Image 1 (cartoon, one colour):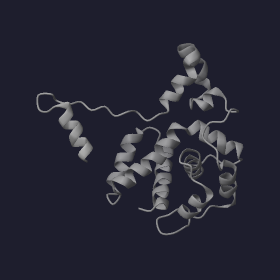
Image 2 (cartoon, helix red, strand yellow; image 1 turned 90 degrees about the vertical axis):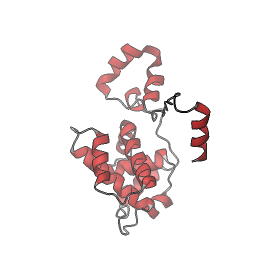
Image 3 (cartoon, helix red, strand yellow; image 1 turned 45 degrees about the horizontal axis):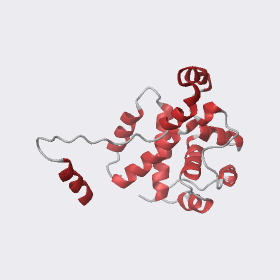
Image 4 (tube, helix red, strand yellow; image 1 turned 180 degrees about the horizontal axis):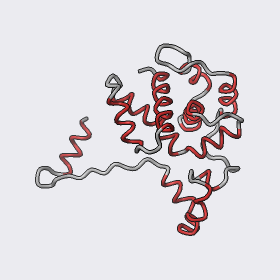
Length: 186
């Protein structure tokens, strides 16, 4: 898949998540990919990276979209995630959003204005309130503050990172070093 096709797939998945908040996202994603066997491992990783970036940073992305006067829709969220999180520039967006086969339609005027306002920025901005920087609903901020105290922002930042992968090794069948060598070889 081309980068544009991956973005189009991510936007489609974001729309599916928005349409059905009752299903767990991982189950929805698994079902979506099951119907699209043509998507390879790299495609799946890239599509899921965009999807989960939007879900993890949704409050910040929506804050940036609202600051730019852009509607909070899946396509705009994907554009913001790519620019703020992946460092995409306007040239990257124009290449991906070219309206070609399996790729999203070209950027409209509002999206070009959004891209211009997001150029060179990251997710964080000093003007964002704590609940936006922490990507939690505003009504939960007091509860989190009561539970976490001074470490509130540090803990919320930790929740936005991708979970680490831990491997367990059956020491009756192999050694740690053998598994490390096997993983290094792949």
